[in-house]
Length: 127
Image (cartoon, rainbow, N blue to C red; front, side, top):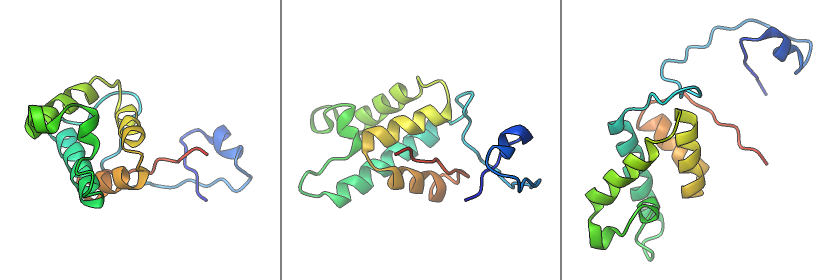
């Protein structure tokens, strides 16, 4: 695999073949602060929920069911509540980590981030 860091001593910890590279990352997730906009978080949750609902039509609900009763409160109200809760995270990486944990679907969350919202990301799964 390839590992990138701005700290050369850290890079040497992975082996002797250390080189400089230019990474063309235009829309990264921030691990120090929350930079994701409210609308992006809404689109992210909405798409995750819709794809989960399509994948399990017998259940009929996706991640939104973790934030409220869609049938009783209405989809828009539960979606707004989910966004409000997730925007309490301190940074983008924590917010995405919460979504991965809640949804139980790493690949789906990353797919929506990359292909719908255009984030340049790769989150390494820990075993």
